[in-house]
Image: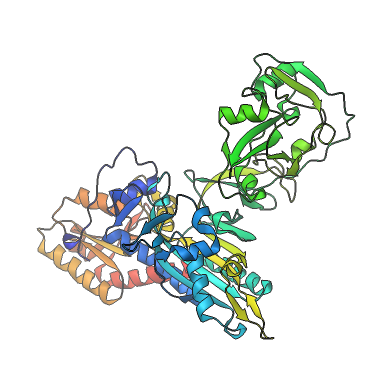
Length: 571
C-alpha cells in the first residue's frame, strides 16, 4: 500500500485523559478513533493488525478440530430467560425491544445461542465431540469503560463452545483448548500465563484465565516463585497455618472510647492486629451478610458471592442497615449478638484464640473471644490473599503482580444444557445433557496487549506475525526520480513475493518519515536515499538499534528470509 493513498492520520499528541501506552499509541498511530465512551472505530492500519490476529486464531482453532460459524449478535430474551441469566446478568447486559415490543439483548457472550444450536442440530452421541466457534463483536454496558480497547463496551471476541457426552470428554476438550490458547498467544508474540480463575457470571465448575503481565493490568495475579502456583486474586487462596493450642481465657467486655479502626484497637489493647478480628456488614439479594476476617485482612467479595450463590455483588451496608444489625455505630461491629441473615467466618479468624472484636455496642469491644464457645457462623475461605502469604501447595511466600486477561476457558458441565433442556441420545437411546466447555479470547484486547508489551518511547514494535505490514519502504527525496524508481521497483517486487509492504511516498521531510516509521512499528524499514549511488539501500529492524546496507538486488531475498525465520521462530 502506498501511504500517499492511505487513510493513516497519525497524531503528535493525544488527549490528556489517555491513561495507558497501548491506548495512546493506537490513537497516535491512527489505528483507532473514539466514537463514544468505550466505543471505537478501527481505521485501516488497526483493522489490518486485527485481521492478522484473527488469522492466527482461526488457523490454530481449525487445526484443533473446531468449526467456525457466525451467530447473531441480537439475541431473543427468551433464550437468556431459559438459562436464568436474563435478570441475573445485571446492567452490563444491553437490552432492547423491537417495534412489536419483543425483548432482545446484544450478546456479551453466547452460551445460550450455541446451546440452542446444539439442542436443535445434534441428536446422537455419534455426532460428539464437537467444538463450534465464532469471531464476533460483543457488547457489554461497562460501568466505567477505560484503557481504550482494554475495557470497552463494544469489542471483538473469539468464543468457542465444546459439546461432549461425558466429563472425560470435557476434560480432553478443555486440555486441547488450553494447549491451543498457549500456541495462539505465543504466535501473537504475547507472554501469557494460565492462572486459576473465578468463573463469574459464565458459571461452571472450573476455569482458567490467560493473563498478560502488565503494570497497568486490571487484575492481580497471585503466584508462587517456587512451585509456580498461579491464580487470579479473586480465586487465590493461601496456606492456613495451624495454631498451637492456647487456653481460652474469660470473655471480657472493655470500654473503648473513640476506638474505631483496627489500628486504634491494636494500639489500645497493645496487641498485634493479627490478634484482632473485624466484622463487615454487606447487603446483596435483599439479605444482610456479615463477614468476619482477621484484623489485618480484607474481605474477598467474589468468594463471598460464590459461597452464598448470590446473583448480586455484595456492597457495604448503609449506616441505617448497619445500626439495625449491630445496634451500634460504625467501628463496633462484632460476631456476638449480631442480627444478620448470614454470618460468614473466615477459617483463619475462626482459628484465632482469645481474639479482640467489636461488642455491637458503642465504645465497647470484647477481648478473649473464641469461635464455637462465644459465637458460631458459616466457616470458609473469605479472605483476600496478600503478598508474602504462604503458598497453599508448597508454603513458599506468595508474590502478587498486575495482569490483563486476554483469554478465559471454562468447564461449564451441564449448567446450560440442563437449564435449556439440550440433550442427545446415548448408546442406549437414553437422553443425556451435553457436557459443555466455553473458551473465549478478547481479540481486540489481544491487539492492545501486544502493543503494551511491544513498544518503546518512539512507538509500536510489532511482532512480525501480527504486524499489519512486514516491510516499510521510505523514499528520502521525492524530487529524486532515481530514488522514486528504485523504491517503486522494490515495492512491486516485494508484493510479487507475497510480502506485505508499505511504501512511504509522501512529500514529507525525512524526519517526519522516520518518526512515523518508528511510531507505526513495521518490523523492517528500508530507506532509499543517497546510498543508491553505491547500489545500496539502508535496512533497519524496528526492534534493533543498528542499521546496515545491502545491495538493492538482494533486498527481496533478504526480506523473504527474514520473514521465513520469524515464521519458524514464532509460529
